[in-house]
Length: 150
Image 1 (cartoon, rainbow, N blue to C red):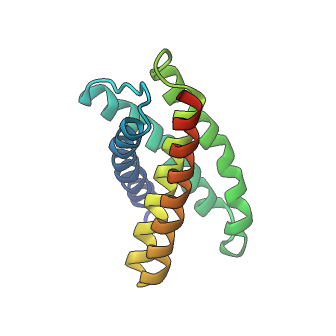
Image 2 (tube, rainbow, N blue to C red; image 1 turned 120 degrees about the vertical axis):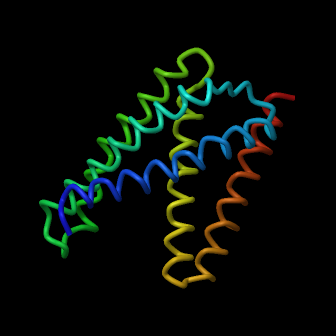
Image 3 (tube, helix red, strand yellow; image 1 turned 45 degrees about the vertical axis):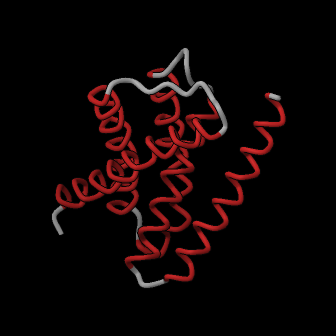
């Protein structure tokens, strides 16, 4: 496959998962009664497109330059794009978001991506387990947050 097509595919997947993660984070913020504020739809789309491009370029460089046998090890290099994306969201929502919300946004994105991959590959049990485990983690975070703010 042509390298530009691969980059576009990675960008589309990253943008899709990020666009799903933002409203889910907003819903979770409402559940825990957080002051999570989102910008307008257009501004959020621009932020998501820039952030997803950075994530896509990171994955694309790994798949382009690293031998397939070492992709698992090379994914550790994704910490740099992840830090950049967290900083982008933190700067874009400077007054209303903490680093916790930006990190939780990426957790939502990773879980959505893993869930979709598990469904597409036919691992339905794994997909259910991903949702259940993440739901338990979110419930624990919500309980902790509500107990701290009460």
